Figure 1: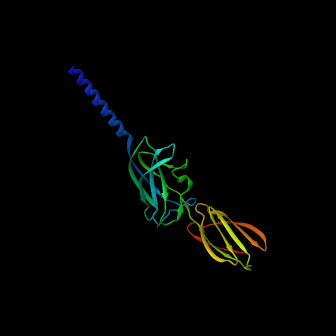
Figure 2: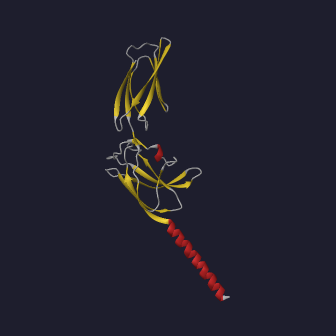
Figure 3: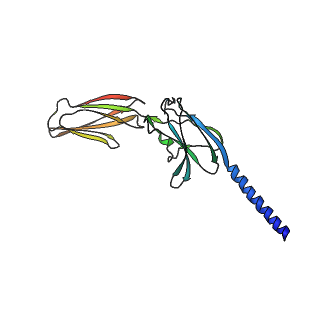
Length: 215
C-alpha cells in the first residue's frame, strides 16, 4: 500500500511539474520595437511624443481587448516595449495621439480591424507603425453681394455642416482626419432659387491651407 501511495504521489508530482514546465514554455520574453512613420511617405513622426499601445485579445467573438502597456515615442519617433507574452494569446499594436492631434491612426492599425498590426510572440520584433497625418483647411466664407434673404450652407460630411442667413464673412478651420482628399459641398438660396456646387479639397499633412469661398 505504501509503495502504491509513493508511486501515486510521484506521478502526481511529475504531472504537476510537467504542467508547470508546459506553462513556462508558453511564456516568452518579447521585445517590440520600431518607429512611428507618416503613412505614404515613411517619414518619422518626430518631436511630439506618440503613444503606442500593446493590446491583448481576450474575446475574439466580441472583439474585446485589454491594454497591456502604453509607451511614448522618443524625439526621433522610436518606441520599445518589453513584455513576457504567452504563445496561446494574441497581441496587437495601435497608436493614439490625443494631446497633439497630429494624425489619426490608419484603419489597419485599429485593434478591431482584420488587418490590425498583430505582434508575433517571442524574441525581438520590429514593427513600424504608419498613421495618416492630419491636414487642416482654414475656410473663409464671403458673400460678395449679400441679400437680406440669402441662406448659405456648407457640408463636409461627418456632421460638419453649418448655415448662415444674410451676409457672410466668417472663418472656419476643419480637419478631414485620415481623408487627405475630401469633397466639400455648398448651397446658396437667393431670390427663391437654390444653387448647389462642390469642390475637392486636398490637404497637406501636418499643415493648414487657406481656402477662400466666395459667392
